Structures are given as structure tokens and as C-alpha cells.
Length: 232
Ligand code: MN
Image (tube, protein in one colour):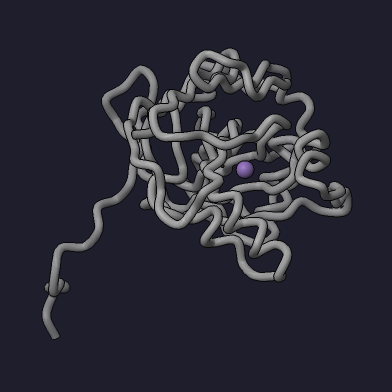
């Protein structure tokens, strides 16, 4: 047996995200996303919040795009939406963690855009099919620089907002999250062995909407940072 693998072609590069205050980068393992985690957003999507348990979908690590990018309008959609979200970066392994201990496993926080092909997502939702075509596509997980817990603590109240071409589209507070960050980590850790490198997009507030080529998106979570994206 050969002592190491010889690949037929070069393997994909590891996606990574810049970290505030250091040249080191955060290597991305998995991307989990929480659905319907703000009441007003669930209402605008025409669905009720399930208060018994949060639910999740995933994006591939290769979908990561860092703030400041210019990306093309994606194929296969005529209703390409922004979703501004608080992102949690996991820093240590955990499974079956309880809510009070969940904070210990957070490396830091970031601001993200869960870009969505809404038309494809809604067709899938109506037909009871997976959401992958609507959610897990190239360059759909936009993210700011990660701020470490040492730098920002664990924010419980902070404005979260998104502007398109300077017009405010989404404005809320992360204290409006139905499932808090520790509750999400605790719940998710009952189904997955979370490891350093995992990212969790925690859900979007109301005001999601379509963007067009030429649009510039600017999102913020106060005390965490900002994310910028241009659609070409
Ligand atoms: Mn989302």
C-alpha cells in the first residue's frame, strides 16, 4: 500500500474566514443554518414557528464568500434573496452539551448573509422536497471577519440590519431570536458532534427581499461587524 494518497486531481481547497486581530484564518468544517428563528420572518414567509424544536439545513463549506466580494447573479432563479444573520463559530468539540455550558464552545461571532434562491426554496417547500437547490449553491454563504469571544463577549442584545443600495430592508435585534445561541448549540449538539470549524447561521429577521445585478448589500450586527456584497 502506498504510504500516502496520490490524488487523480488536486483536492478542493479548505474554505476559511479571516479572524479579527490576527493573520490566522478560521478553517470552515460545516455550515449549519437555522430556519424560522425570528417570529416576524416566519410570518412573512406564511408559516408558523415550531416552538417545540428548531430546524436546520446545511450549506457546503465551499459556498463561503468573504465580505467585500463581487459575485454574479446565480443561475436558475428569478427571486434571489438576502437574509442577514448572526453567525456563530464553534471553537471546541461538543456533543450533548447543556444550555448553560454551550457558550464555552464558541470561538467567536460573525455577520452573515444566507443568500437564497427563494423561488426554488418555495417550490421545494411546497412539494416536501429538500431545500438544497434554494439554499446550498455556489457563493451563498457570505460572511464577515470573525470576531473572537475575547474581543466581543457573548452578545445577547444587538441591532441586526441590512441595507440594499443604502435603503434599510431588515432591522431587528438579536434578542428577538426565538432560539438563543446557547439553545441552538445545545440542540444541534444532540444530533451532531460539533467540532472547531463548524459555523452556525442563526436565522434571519423579517424584511427579506430580492436583489438584482448592480445592487450593493451592507449588513451589520452592532458590536460584531459588517458584511458587504456586490451583485454583478
Ligand atoms: Mn436563513
